[in-house]
Image (cartoon, rainbow, N blue to C red; front, side):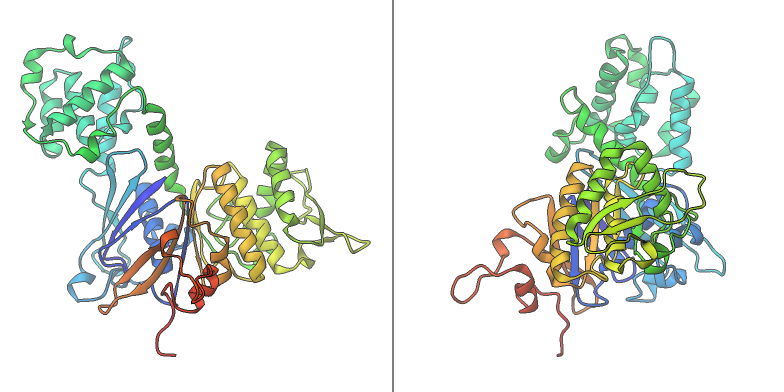
Amino acid sequence: MISKLQINNYKSLHELELDVGRFNVLIGENGCGKSNVLEAIALAAAAAADKLDNEFLVSRGIRVTEPQLMRAAFSFNSMLEPIKINLGFENLVDFQKYILHNDNQPYSKWSNQSALNAIQIELMIDILNRIKNESTTFRHIELLPLSSQRALIILVTAQTEVINFIINLSSPFTHYELQQAAKYLNIFSGKDLANLDEHLIRKLPIYEEETPESISQFEINEENTKKILEAHNFRTRFKEFTIFSAENSALRNFSKEGQIEPLGINGEGLLKLLKVIQSKSPEQLEEIVTCLELFDWFDGLHIPKDFSSYEDKVTIADRFLSTAFDQRSANEGFLFVLFYIALMVSDDTPKIFAIDNIDVALNPKLCTKLIKELVRLAKKYDKQVFVTTHNPAILDGIDLGDDEQRLLVGSRNKQGHTRFKRIELKDKPRSSTNEELRLSEAFLRGYLGGLPKGF
């Protein structure tokens, strides 16, 4: 999962650092920057996927505007500087770093100019593939820090031109990076460093540098390899990050999927996804039906089985009615909840995603119960979720005693920069009679911050 965000120069986000968990609720006044945080993550995901054209950014839920206004326009210079987004992933050493440039000219496109760009990394992997042999199989090379990947390539080849190419890519190695590469050889390929050419090792440019304690605990070893692989899977699927904002018309008419599959940002493609879930995983469909029992009147859901069928409806049973009806007659809140639950349980939807304004069309009590269900599903189906809201009832569904759940209250400082404050269990206010307050009540009383000023 993503564990830390560092965002610089994106809209209202000026040098923002944020620690995040599995399920994150962002609340605050209008215009404080909640959606900007989601967009910054989506922009980094687009850079990771090497798809930074405007059409793709829009399809991921980003509000695309003139490139200079995508930066933090707190000064003229900031509108010319790059957007920098760093993501820390749980159990991985390196930050994923994205440096996004745009020359602000008409029809110009964003480009990602990180320390090592995608082409260089592909060349490095290609070199590894070329030097494979029957006794050495390279797997999970991407788990190593990039500098250790370079060290590894040099350790397994004596080709001078390869050595010069890799060294010129960036800075020399530290002893720690060389050690990581050596451990990789032992664990993943069975190749022993003792058999390497000592003359080759002497060619390595090495910095004398202390290894930070925070890094050394994540060393490549047999014990944490599984955790690292799981983290890498999350990092790989991060490219799919999307900001969903359900719309009534797309859900009620079951709009077909568009550029993004399986679900569009407004709910397009939901019918097909429900058919896929029904075909591939009856257990997941049962989970959906069980969750829909949040609605007291709900008595069943029928989904067409034929993928080629032109039948564009699901049938919904109401225990008070003698006749079933389809989604075109369903209430808006029911359709939104159906969409959210399908998004959570499906194997085909993103591992990491966001829902903007999750409280739309939902009764306050339903909001509270829904959040509890979504947290449970996020843990069960290994998803990481970011949601924004203006409804205080959402907060009552959060367990502040669970470190995987984060309540983040947004505001803007005197310079207009977005800031977020995490509310922890120890921060939960109490009444004048020392009774515990519900988070919704504490928020409305202004104890948590995040309320508009001046009225």
